[in-house]
Length: 207
Figure 1 (cartoon, rainbow, N blue to C red):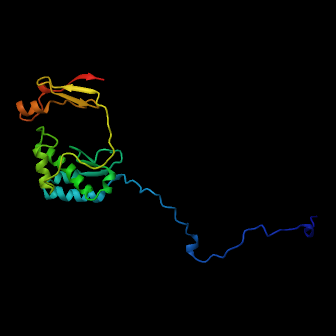
Figure 2: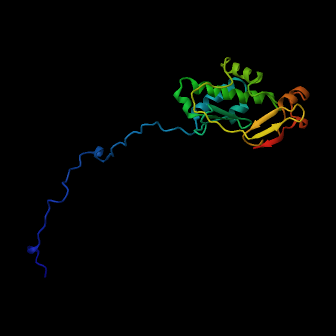
Figure 3: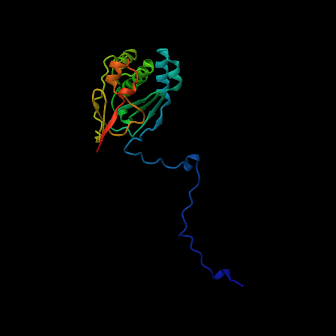
C-alpha cells in the first residue's frame, strides 16, 4: 500500500489566490484604440432620412420611397456617385474629413437624380440646366460641376474610342457601353433630346 507519509507536496509554485470582489473584476480590459478611425461602409439611415425629407419637400414621393445612401470606400478620387433610375447615392467616406462636404456632396448627387427624373426619357447633359435647376431647388445654387477636394487621383487609361456616325464626335471610354448610346449633341439637335439610333456611337478603336 502507498505510504502517504513519504510524499512531499510543494505548494509554493501554485498561483496566489486572490479573492473575488465584484462584477467589475470580471470585466476585460479595454482594447487599445486604433490610430486610424474605422472606415464606415454600407447604408446610412440618417442620411437617407434627410434625403427623403428633401425629396418630399420637392413633391417627389416616388423617389423618397426608393432613395438609398451608401458609404463606399472604393470611391477614391470621386466624392460621390448617383445611379438613376435606382435612386441610389454613393459617398466617399473621406468626405467626413472636410467640413460641410457630406451635405454638399449629398445634395450634388441628389440633384442628378432629380434632373434625370424630371427630364423623363429626354437626354440631358449631366451638369446641364436641368441639374443646375435641381441644385437651386436644393439650396446650393452656386454648386460646381466638379469638386476641388484633395482626394487621391485615380488615373485610368481610356483605351476605347467611340464616334458619332453623323458629326464624327469622338468619345473616349474606359469600358464598353452596356447599352446603346447615341451622340447627345445630335440627339438634342435632330431628335428633341430623345435617343435616336441614327446617332448611335460606334466603336472605332480599341488599344
